[in-house]
Length: 186
Image (cartoon, rainbow, N blue to C red; front, side, top):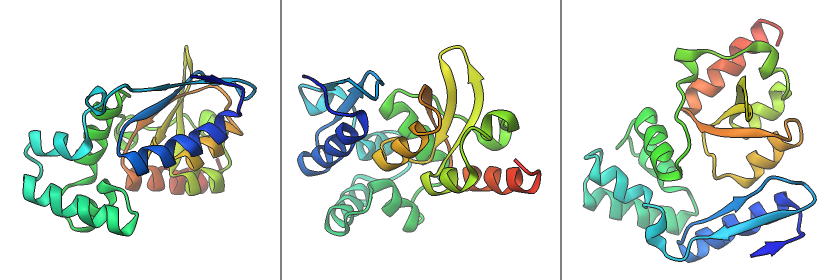
């Protein structure tokens, strides 16, 4: 489907649609004036997070079912529930999200960040969005997100970095990187 709605508005609608229907959708194209959405024709187009975590033997099917029920009743994300219940580790979640969403996983603490690139996003915005620009790449700035499906986070970063590539990283690493950047005066 093609539409002239702003990308931020489309991201919000797609996120709502995914939560309600439990079926995947994604935004293709990244223009503030025009965006094209591509909605997967079947839920099998993108593997479900719970199924991936079970397949990788991070959790059992019973744990996935219980956590999914809690996520639906509380409005929390499945990954948040599993982390809160201490059933998975942050890196397991981040790597599995990387697989599910077909975007790169990056260990911010291992590879570090380019301070000049991190400065593209104000620290308070990056901390609220749980995202940090890592480095410049040919296709744009590589930005690590704790939740790359969060439309609010994507919009916040997009206001400062109109052309970026998604990556996923651990929330605690992103927070630590921002703390270190603040200490260095980034």
